[in-house]
Image (tube, rainbow, N blue to C red):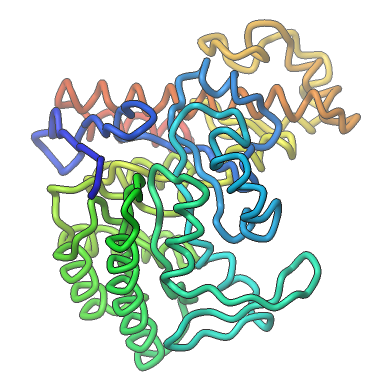
Length: 374
């Protein structure tokens, strides 16, 4: 039923870093790749056309938010998210599991699904694994994530085991629901859980890998744990996930986390960090984050980055961008968002080139040393 094709092109001789081509309903995607987050069918502060111009052909949207607003009646009327938003590239939809998890006191999880209150108007809803698949089918997701139980980093073993048990059952039910929909054209990915317990992580990774999913996501990381713990459990979990399918780590977007993921053979990752930083006046550069609110930029005639091709770097000085940020002008957020997404897209091009040349680990060391001033 899957219409996804994944081809590994090159693997670095010194680690698991790899390049590939992910063929999806709305065109091919080169991997490894960062995916901009467009929660409400829009990546904040940037035109769809500009995303395409940069080179992106896969962005995220969120099932929870789209289900509540604009709602499935609107999505049905427009024939899905692509027509509704005039985005002709691919869309991956998160299941909404993390958003529901974040609601804390406004939700209840049991065997059947998740009962929650809308953060918009307090109305009560239920997400079952079947309903999430149905909603993602209406949305027209090119990659659809199945419903899982996301857990915080400090829960005990018994609670983590129960969350994984429910996640496994929901995964089985999600596949069954997908198979019951004759014209389901998306690609349903499974999600590995298990919290920070090695036996649960291994069991989850091996089980989800063996199921009828065309791709595998690693969930439950980057949820507040220390960086060293993230690194350890990413490497451990990835070692038990099949290399035959595309592998996705949810919720990472800073250069150090990206390099760590790529080194462990991860193909896809996403995060709101790049766009959120930009709207707050901070941009990525090879020499580390540049905070434009600082007075040091007030008289600076230089561009953000002389090697960058974004509008901000081609046309404007740091002084002007500092002015826009200090005045809270929307144009500042738009320019800096374009810069950060251009920067990450080009960083992944550089990473892919280093893998093709067999120099990924040396590139990682040199980049991290410069970026963090070590």
